[in-house]
Image (cartoon, rainbow, N blue to C red; front, side, top):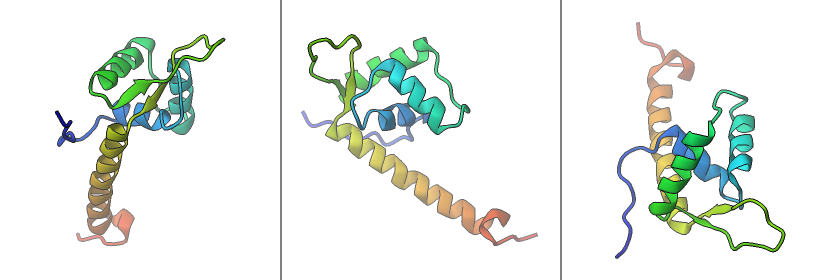
Length: 112
């Protein structure tokens, strides 16, 4: 059965975790990635992160990496289906951003 793309927006948590897994990454690495990229605005607790990882794994958007000898932490990587989800979400966000820039003072057009 072919998995269909999610039609609702991804949460910020989901999107950030998936972006962190474009390269093999473990939970603590994901937490560091997100905190660094968001300049500390987003910080995950272990419960939030591991719950999201389990959910993404069930959806087949991420998958465990092959275990390597000496590896202490379980690593995950984004799947092709996961990449399609991320790309669809970024396109959706780009549309919203464009609309916002067209109608706000930030975008140079301001209607009083």
